[in-house]
Length: 326
Image (tube, rainbow, N blue to C red; front, side, top):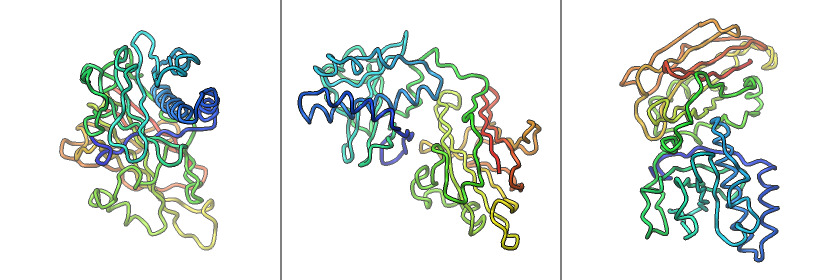
């Protein structure tokens, strides 16, 4: 995997993360050390947030990076996973092609996660993972191109077994707000997820031709081991059906839902089920992937403002559900 070939998982950093990072940074004796501590803290918090979302317990405050003396003396960005060990979360700044490993993080680590920062520090990408035993003690850097997909992290966490059903979001996605360019944080523009739209021109043709006034967003479903170390992308496109001069909230909305592979994969795993459910849980539509499907989609459906529905993705062992309201 390389940072230019495979999009990492994006994590938004909010006010709490920056407040902690500022507090730790001002304690340092030099501006250079303060900046390093700031980035290390944000990197740890980003991985902590991701594992929390995956329902994996961590002990954020037990790491050396949260210990005042140790973070002052050493260049550390560790996150403790109870009964497993320490995960090192190394910052990657714009333009860098490798993660730097100071001597103090070469031991007592289960592995390393690369956390790439943009020019603005409100969002990072988790680029990938490498286990400690794959890193030579003589190395000071790990090229980003040698990283494994983030899903490989779960090989180190035997207790991280997925729940039978994972609700990806506890709040309903309000599709009507999408027409006003108001989006939930985890729903991203297609270019952010797929890179150049031309790279998946065939698969996305039905979205681009859906309707000139359509809005499309995509969400990464990162369930690691449950789908053979492969992330998936749930894509939802909506279009308002014209009805006089009424505002969008009073119009019927047409909806298109697709499921795509990610991590540079061409095809979906076979036997993935994409289901459309009513608010009460009744199955309205379903489609199952085959071994040569580069995406699957539901038949377009329509609804009025205020109506709700659920989209469910399952492979028989796990189920993830997203809840929407029009």
